[in-house]
Length: 306
Image (cartoon, rainbow, N blue to C red; front, side, top):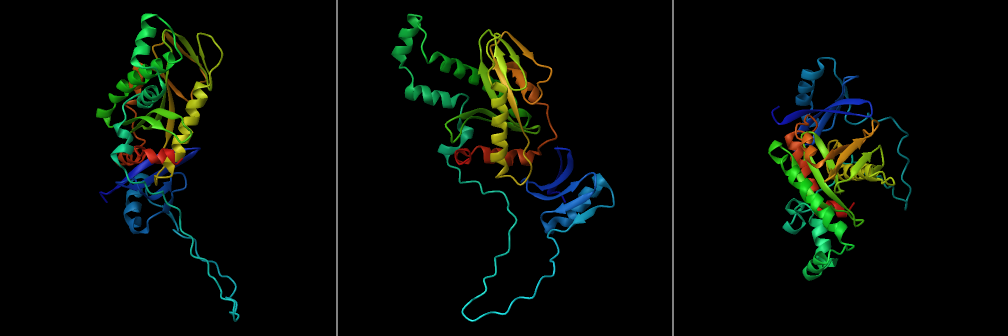
């Protein structure tokens, strides 16, 4: 029984216990309210039930792995020249296979801001042009890119402090639509998408879906972060046999003040030094599940295929 673990899961009013293998594969799950158990892998039924009884007590109701076959009409006689084609049995759909990983496609090698570095190197000003603009104190269209790069690097350094606590961090995840995810954090407390915004010296107000910088027009920062988390949840769900909770995080860098609206709860909002608050979070993913999700997320092709 040592290779099985029990993992609580709550969402949309449901309260379940999942019994998983060490690689995160679900072998059974139980509904806490009804004590109904669904067996996913029959070979582990007895061990899974023994574990669940420790949490739920006796009186478990085991749901059949496959529904009983209903009686139907007799097979019609075969007619000459018209063979009968029996449809193949339907298979339960499992997680997709993770593609092979090569060093060039391993996102774990990315440094914070790597996507911006590549774009600036490819399309941005040369070193001479940058030096000239600096000496003449000229502003250029690339100033915001360098500011964004500094912000991602500063947040990246803060996130790396979580690694000794059992967290895994990825940076610069390229998406198929040309966009990217600044940072992805995977650990005992779940999975978090981190969207970085650098507004030096600004006063920031954040609501449920919008943010205002120095009282200016609303910007859809929070809504974009929610959309990003939904995308990540969908992608990871294809490759994991267990629920992968994903939450959005919006991090502001270099600001003077931050005002969170009382109703803002869908997105975690931090200043750069506050992201360490993720560190103590636990009880959502087991260490084995953390490694499994990280093993999926570090594949560049997983995101480009989405």
